[in-house]
Length: 346
Image (tube, rainbow, N blue to C red; front, side, top):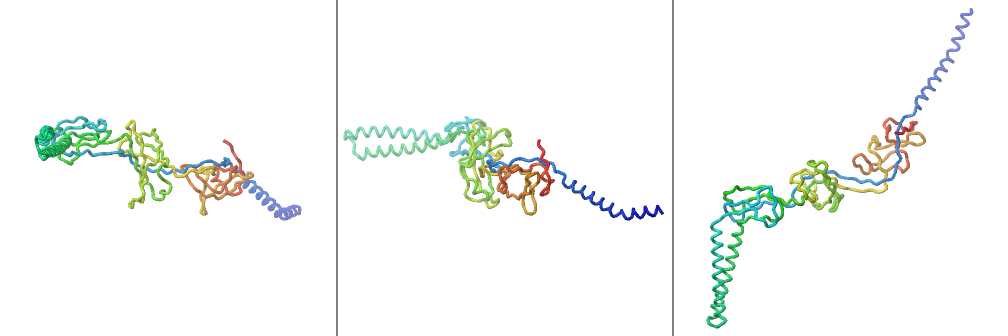
């Protein structure tokens, strides 16, 4: 009888025990849901932001010249050979052409003869010993002889190949004793005191770049070399094949380190903003509706939608945040809106 009574009591108490167990489990789950998520924050401050464009260009000489032979002849002497520098007007090589040399000597002698004849006729004319026509004939003969001499002299001087400006002889196309034909190149000549960097920029950036836009240059061949310069030329036409426009940047080259066809990396300033909100790129999270960040507000995570206005490397200019808010920069990807936070310092 006593056993039956105890069994009846247990059956009657079972619903109450189950209710207590459910309540305990719910309280335990609630405590677990409220467990704080560790994060790190950083205050949002207004700052300056510069947006840059990076493109790759090619170095070229300010003047890259093929010096041609204007009068044919045999290469008799090389005065400045390839690899050496020359100033404007320096003789680089001498050609030999017996015909031109003889013609020059003949024209010079004819000019001397004409000058002698003219001076003699002038004296006689002043004494009225000859007619005016005889005097004028001597004067015209002198003019003709001087013109013939000038022509012969210019042709003869073309046998002396000279540097058109200061630069380096980069190559020589004829060997000593070879016959150089007229209008064929004999030297490759480079003015490398100042170099030009040419680069193609995508069409959509044409409104951002103009003459005078700041550019930072670096070179694969010289990793430690950085050069500050400005855009010196902007093409006003688009290359139809790749939809780019060409820009040029001029760079002094006093040590002659830069050479044609070298690769140059251009970092071009597009825009500069003052007193704007800039956040780390890692702080942004993408969703189907756009970008958002989390801020810490009263120890809770608050999801805030933002709009990207400009991005450069690891920084993003955004709209939608205010100064002095606490931006969550570590742990944000483990959060949901309203989560309890545990702010951890470094």
